[in-house]
Image (cartoon, rainbow over all chains, first blue to last red; front, top):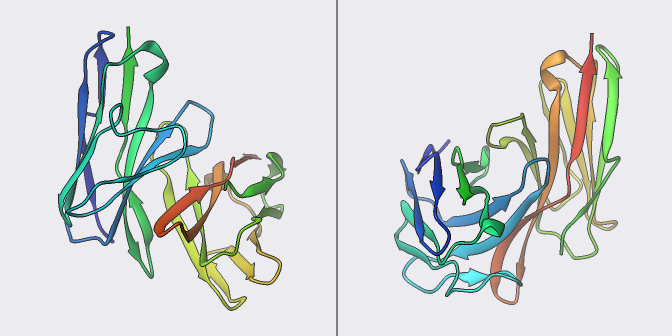
Length: 114
Length: 112
């Protein structure tokens, strides 16, 4: 199965600043998704990262706030822009699919905005 | 649209069985099952494609009823290591975009 390296693993940021999260996959994957997860809650889909084109965002998430890049089939970034304390959460990327291993997740980025 | 899981939480003694259900109001291409332990990323368990097939993984198996748009995860003779939160994910194409959307999760606690 694919292995995804996600960076940073955690960060504490000042409100009004931006943070870029990176996900590097060790093999080419067709699909990559970005999720947000509050402690004890489910995974909320932010967007589908499309290779070479604009990401497809879910309701409630906009490109200006969460710009996403996917320059190739092994790499994607999510930027959390103009952060506020409400953006504090765990952000996860996932890639796949594999018929035997489904989608693999990165280890997550725990973001705290102060 | 988010699939609905039931129950929300289950507490078992080691060796007991459990069933977790997942249903969706939208036509499904596939259903995925994941387990997440506290502080860790979700880990893939199995994927079920259209056709009502049943798959197994150790003592964990699942079924997918395409007509009813439902899937069930069966945990047999549960072990302490099965504790965690189980998520079903439904994959499909909505307005031209492929998505994997997760249910709210079922927290499983296995006691000795």
